[in-house]
Image (tube, rainbow, N blue to C red; front, side):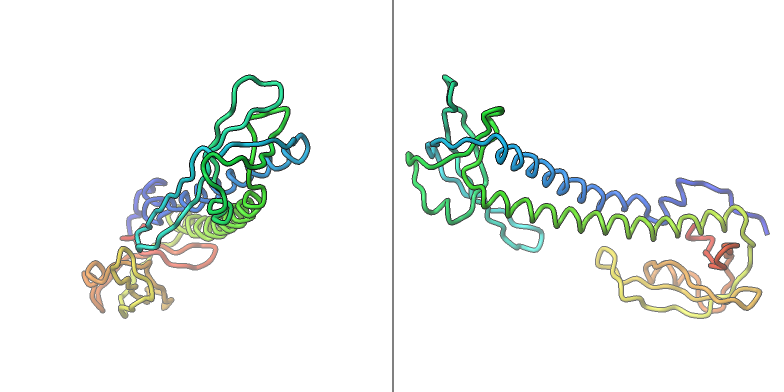
Length: 238
């Protein structure tokens, strides 16, 4: 049988390798915020001095996700005059609800700023530490997911590449259609099973039932065999 022309980008698209970027971006985003917050906390611990800040405004932001769950974030807008400067610095900072509810506009509250970088300041160090832990944990989970998913997807990609480049090409007969426990874009996913010309069994990647029904039980398909693992890959999916 004639071997299918090889295309790296087609394999990457068919195996969904580009989705690996989502958890990676997620991990980098949260991890980057955690690193920035950690750097500021270290700076304030080393060079921090205490002063007074005037509360200029109390703000509340509410957001709803796609499932309707509401997230509430509390902010204080304040100004402070570092020692040796003639102009006040104005900042807007996320704070705990407790602090937000305790203060009023025009009230003076303690502020800690770095004398070496006066624009780096906080009025709620405890809330900052909680945020650091939260972003660090989420970033770490995202990194683990990205690494785990990346390793799994890379092994699949290498298997397909070996099969396309050096694997044996066989005819196989479809023996069944199975419902998976996965939905994609609210569409139930299925797989087809086959037995090839050597008697080895295999299964397709998941797809919509409508697509797989085009290959009913008893029909003949072409599969490529990974010479290292023996895994069969359906030509129509790679």
